[in-house]
Image (tube, rainbow over the protein chains, first blue to last red):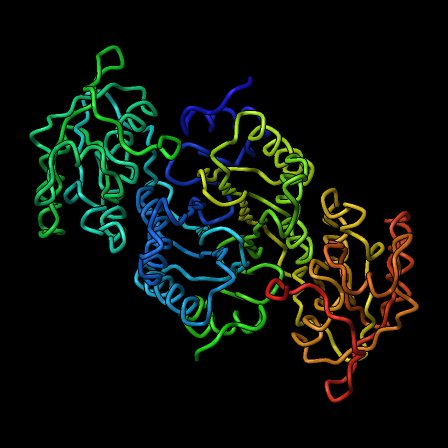
Length: 299
Length: 299
């Protein structure tokens, strides 16, 4: 195969063909919010493993305060662990920084990392620092744990399930919300403990690319009611679908369980909306055409 | 504190001051080959976690074949897990690649990663790929496990212990051995299972900076007999001390146990030398002055 990968999923396919098969204890490898590992020793809990990178010029600009860069770098994998219904445990952090950096830059970056680690209970146990000729680059690897019955994969949804999102969507970049977001950790853990929640993922690339990913993993088509999308003030439906970096949770819910789930949600999280935005369909149906979300391989 | 970190250890000190304390299940965090975690659920085994980065221009050049870059990227954390007496389990890999990369570059890189993963039993369960304006940057995070009695920290050595190294030292760069090295995984696991081996670490920065690190972690001074160093053909003692990237194991051994350990080693690993190069001293003694090994913050 010659040529250039045209999308992230095409590249993932190429990589999966080249790499050896994951070990038999791997419940899900490449292709969910986190890798899920069943080591059968760990008291019945499943282990989670996630790595996530931030690159200057893609996830933030050279003007972004470094404390916010650090906060975001740690919160992104927390959001992925939340989307599995899990709890963060330990993190290791790799930073490639420009050689011009002084103590104050290092301190600002790690203050942001430390604040987020403290807020979401991740313990930073190591890492690596290198000086790089390129721009600032951060990579955070995080472990987590989830009780076996609570694990929620992208592949668990069924035709007929309702699609719901937490919070509101759109405008994350123009509002700089993407630098200050709160991963939905408590919410993800609570949702994963509820009957009827069949699949879950976090909205990082935007509904326009994340929803098709969830639907495909579950072998379903989907229907969205654009008017039902919960919009951040001043945002259009188009922005809510394609901006990305909302870090809200997208879930599928058995319609039979929805009324009960909804009323319990409102008691536990009275300030955060949980909104039905559509439903999953049989895979023979045609999905709603959505403007595409963010793909790291598109300009 | 203003100014610029003058060394990697000064930067680590700064970072440790800013970050929250690691969780109580952390046996060692920053400052050993791997983080060691005791989750008290895992059948008595300890969990290991390591992250390691490769940067073009530091760990390889733009002319290095990508398959060798991939091999090295995966083998470096394997070497760290070997130095704890552990076994690699799972890995996640972050690659920031130039946007000019086509399928053949991606394939070569992941072939090297896959070959090493297969050779040393690490299962690749996820990762992230981004296009970067900078040079190629790789970060590999790896988990591992070690039976509780086998864990070997840098801090376990005592005054009077002998210092030994596996294999030969020096010339790793000029021979390009650093791109094709075999992590001492079986050897590390075997050494960790033997009585009398009190501390272990892998020689990545060079004896000249790694030995003082081990001695300091154990609260000892050290003495080296330069003539005893096992040299790669064509290498000087100076190169053996300061070149770095040998990826051999440095261990401390109780002198009472050494004769027995030596004879068993020769039976199990007849082709690989295990050489006494010196000993540890009381911390009031003065250490042998060594030319410094590699520090990522020195030019």
